[in-house]
Image 1 (tube, rainbow, N blue to C red):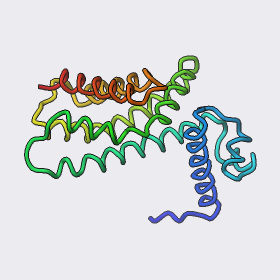
Image 2: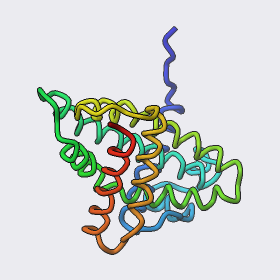
Image 3: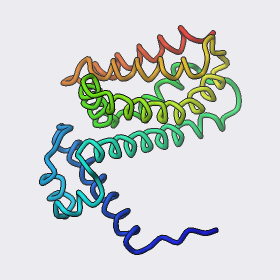
Amino acid sequence: MKVTETPRTRRRSNTRARLIEATDALISDSGRTWFGVEEVCRAAGFTRGAFYSSYDAMEDLLFEVYEHQNDALVERLRRTAEPLLGTTGVLPTDRVVRHLLEAGVTDQPRIALHAALVARAAHQPDIALALDARVERLREGLQEIFVDLIAKTGRTLTVTPEAFTRALMAAQAGASGQFLSDRAATEEVRYLTAMAVVEGLSA
């Protein structure tokens, strides 16, 4: 049976989308990862009532922003991978790694929000569970892309696809926080850690 969206449901969906978009923009523009309800509502052009008709607390909104950022990352990497996978022959490992990193260059706001949620999760078990679920969803989205690209280099994973993807995600998250004021140094560390994971966990 086809479910018909009611005007009220549509309005709420549109409200959530605008709040997510506004908060994502605030993170990118300000470098901060935590905001008051008033600040978010002002950026989105809504009242506090509109916020609380969609979310119980700021954490709920931030988790949806995090999911939005993760989905954008997966889509960006998928678009980057498509032309590589469409070529004939084996590709050099360093070329594949550099293409993937280029697709994630603008990923700093997502990494910053992830770090902020991790800090809160350390003291709040409910946030830890919610964050684990989002990270696992991201891992599932990335895994197929990573596995297909590794195969394109002619290498074979020596661990499970799940372990490989988690290792690469962890390495990139750590590398991205090493030189916050020096983009060139950060990108070099990201490249070296990615190559270390790929070459260390495949043959």
